[in-house]
Length: 296
Image (cartoon, rainbow, N blue to C red):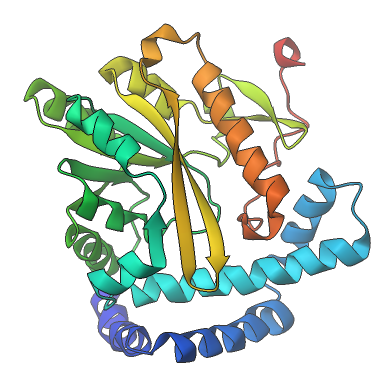
């Protein structure tokens, strides 16, 4: 059944990926109408999240942010599909870096680094970064249920010397690189909620105390990797600029959870500046009523 689904769906995705950008975004507008007005995909979750973290905003403003978010959400889906056939030249034009030399300098110092980001702006096209780097780039992801689409996703990333690894694979892959003296980087999307049973640190995020993922910080300390935040700014439809900001060059010098807390503050700043580009469909604050006594 997985292969059947793949051979039926893939040609359709490939066909869409061949659309010129003007047509691609016109199609995205149609998908927006379907998802927002007809299906209503997670619309209740989105509005609950926005009302929770922005209690001061009017209903009119919440509605504006909600609609703008869904427009961007649909664009992101279509841009991910466009990754199948987009040229390196076109991607470099549309996804730029304001200070890539910050990473190149870390690399020139023979130091590995961890990239931290949130589900904000655009994270689908970040793999073009590897065309500016000498190291081997990895990104942690959740394996797709369909093994054929999973392989396809990996192939697309591998074109730019960027490789997807699961959470379970992360430590052995990066440890092996360190032992062999290979330069690597690894990207982590670290803003989502951990399972409540695995939570060891709670912190305020958008004014509400929630459990937070600390895996990147733990790994960076274990493997002595510099930690860098990347901030994605939407310039206009289909165009993004990424800026890098060092959180920790020597993570072992930081007290526990300070790196994670600094990351959350940087994510918050992004969201306050332009909330419509955050992934509001995730139930990020679902554990807010389960805060352990020692964190209250």
